[in-house]
Image (tube, rainbow, N blue to C red; front, side):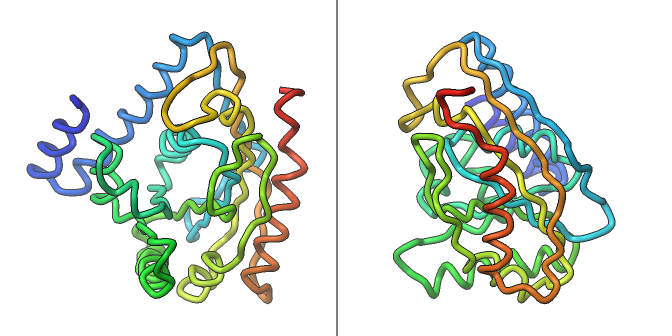
Amino acid sequence: MLFHIAQVFAFGLGGPKAQKPVADWLNRSIMQGWLLTGSTHRFRFNYTPPTDRPLIFVANHQSMFDISPIAWYLRQYTPVFVSKIELGRGTPSVSYNLRKSGAALVDRTDPRQAISEISRLGQRLKEGACSVVIFPEGTRSRDGQPKPFAGAGLAILLRKCPNALIVPIAITGTGKFNPEGLFPLRPFTRMIWTVLPPIEPAGLTGEQVARQAQEAIFGNVPTEQSI
């Protein structure tokens, strides 16, 4: 609630540029709160993304807690998320940040609306206003095993910004930590985010890009039992 109020004041005084650092520290504080459960997180860079090219980060999806480390550790790239429309309302700080950051809030029951929202975000990517984070599974994998990636969202983004570089992120452990909704949280969970080498999308379809990203991520996501 405090961060929600702080974001409202920051946005009112200085617009998105003032609101973003507040949202960044919100995500940092969420991660610090995990320490109270005895759980740990690690963000690894097997590849350091460039700052002079549009970027699309592609990640598997295990939990709502996937998001904060991406937002914090990749903050220099101004990551903006493709998210389901339901998250745009009802959650203090989080919903406000999604709306004010310009996230693509997708209605999965309305394909036309979804295409329009992702296209709008793709245009911002092309203009250099942000990077994009997309979870091609569409919904989170509760057992930690990635689901097949869909390429439709990636295809829309690449039509708008064909020179974007695809950067996979493999996430492990968050599904074990947060198996349902916001609670319960399982203590002493080890969570890892790994930024993987990029995929050049030139000459590839959205489905082909999704398949390559899926293979890279699958190779770096162990079973929950082995974490």
